[in-house]
Length: 427
Image 1 (cartoon, rainbow, N blue to C red):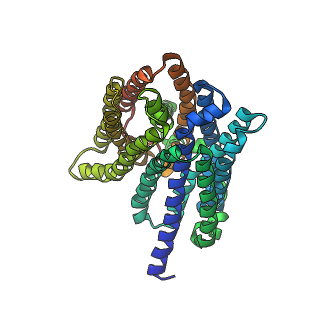
Image 2 (cartoon, helix red, strand yellow; image 1 turned 90 degrees about the vertical axis):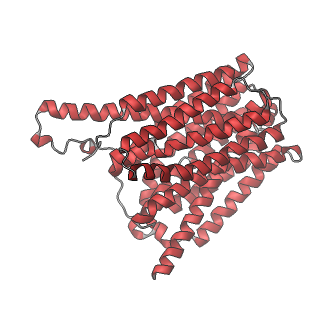
Image 3 (cartoon, helix red, strand yellow; image 1 turned 60 degrees about the horizontal axis):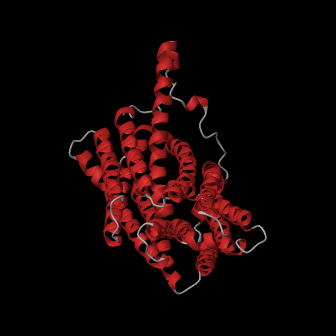
């Protein structure tokens, strides 16, 4: 294969991955934007809707790590295509589930299946980038994948603005059908490199074996030194889990509850609220593109890497905390959207903070560490969605929720500042 053919092949693969990653987050937002009409169809309260929102996360958590292992064995693109079919079918079946004899249980099952299938998307896309592209292109391409992934919610929420002229099931059917067609077209156009024999015959290895913990110098250490090394590893892993959990919890607030906030606190129509709620995610996608190069420039100017990561985390945590406190006292929809755009834009800078730090200290096992922290983080955010639904139902607004999340942002930065260290976790 010539250089031009290889570049074209890689571009086709990455276009497919980008389309699927955009679709999965857009599909995720369709349900969130339709919470009110779905709730009326089911005849349940916000607390029960919080359970349905969490069902997605429970399924997502269940297959997050196994999905990455499967992608390494059979090819990331193959896993992505199959997962797209499953989650698209689950999305299209959701309106039908609300009309069954057991509507809540059936809808819960659809949400669980949707989450389980979409849970493989991030690790599978990372597998495609790692196996289908040369090393010098991976950083740029993975940043594009994450930016598109962050921009997908804007498409889903913007599409929900059509609810003023169409019924909510139409959105579920349309996006579900598009996903199946996209998967079929991707299967036809898929590049062999994404599912080459080398990829499909790789042996499965444990996600984190005992020997992976940094004890390669054990023969040169006494027992005390080895204990210190392992305590350091455990302490750093716990800090990373805490920080990632807080990132997921605070992001879940905006990802799952923005349309409800607009309609409940700002008294906007569902169609109008969904359209306005899409704008902050556009800012988030743009800032995801910017944060990495900005951090690289600071390092090039002589900044210590950990100082850069802390600076980016300060932006991504203190900025949103201030915005949330301001939102608790804002009742104008346009002003609220402006604040949310600034908030999610700053939140996106954690890509150059937390995620870049993982590459600094655990590059050889970054996928494994991220899988662990993201799994636990999503478990925490699934619990938080139920709590948010309960608080809003009891208080009638999001004011207390905003204050609590602002405090969590500050806690997340404090843990990163004082707990995270620059020493590598693996030799």
